[in-house]
Length: 262
Image (tube, rainbow, N blue to C red; front, side, top):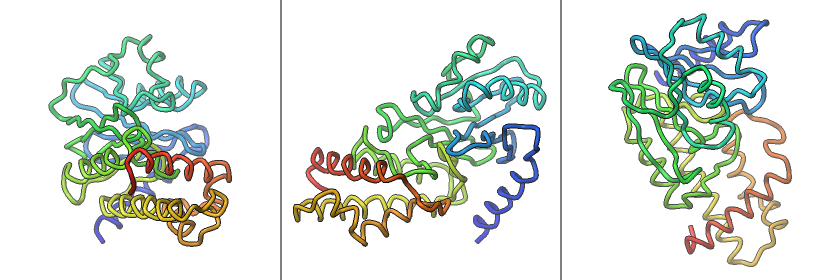
């Protein structure tokens, strides 16, 4: 219950920080940690971590048209010059700001921080990085967990997904805050449910493919559709475009083929 109340309080603080003349929402995660998110659909969560004279940006890729304002916000807030950029993985919606900040003498993906721990996984990409900021008790997980979309564990398959989620669940404590690559902040309890629903999804797809069901038939399956809705944290209607639903099933079948089943 305390975790839920804390998360609700954070949502309220986000709304309190949002201003009509900015393209970003801001929320304080805890001591020395701020979250910035561009005010548009499916924007990347950007971590801002301050320790002494060092300022770290995690995944500062809000889109080219917002990079200058992002820089202005962090300068207004902190006014530091010792700037570092870390990426949870190399996809453009997370690393797209690297070149911009490199030109401003930021150090890119250099890691030597006592207040931050780094873990590796293979799930969403072949080189997923997880960052644990101890002071704020926040875990930045990139797209290993995306609260705006269905699971995308294609690089690591079933085993990689399980290993990545279990790794996150063992970082920090039960009250640690999970910062996904996109979408709302969640508790570890939500992440445990996300793992369960993903494995249920794969098991149902596997069951249907063994019955030689077509993808069209799978997409009409009530049980599969109920599982899919568990990933709809924002309660969008519809949750996914039809093309995305089909692609998710197709890629799930391919993963199951590689692993021999759920």
